[in-house]
Length: 269
Image (cartoon, rainbow, N blue to C red; front, side, top):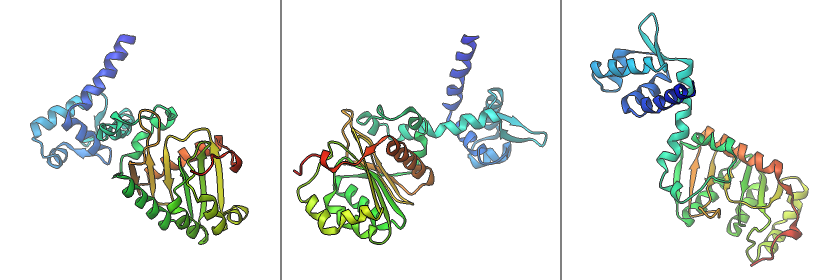
């Protein structure tokens, strides 16, 4: 019985390995098709379309209705819904040769396909500029998990807070504090912003994944193979699924984080 299950499992990957069959499944995930419509949309001949559809039917992924329409079976819908989780690491396979998700809880790895619709931003200056754009575009809130204080952007954040944008952030215990940060926060009235509840902050032992998002835009950077944050390249998106992934990860980290204690931060450098 176990051997049969292994064979069936391997056969699914074999069916998905065919480009035409994969495209057929993606088409059928949106609506039913007649064979002629499917062949026409995919610029395939009727002969090869018929042969590949029969394979999908035999594998239990597709069925034909009494009206000769093709549609995904419930089993097929489950399999197709999992395809994006392979797509994201595949598209960015060079990136994931040098970056890791080993410290990421399994439930977030299993949803990695939510990050599919994104733009890759390369270069420290480009990353910082995009962060600034996210801050400036915020109207309701800014949330972030940051490994070091972006001192050049503190005034931008303060300006948004003064426009009733709530700022919530998580720092690691060893966060890098640039010289002049404390003086700048005092000048901006940071303590009063905290008192008014417009700034929330917490501490965790270590930050490896960097996330910044507002109500519409999201940014994420995964750590290097050594587990260190990499601010040289990040993924940016306005996609709802991407945003939901970031929101859920932030909430997960926030829940397990400790109360913020300024006295435990490293001295300015």
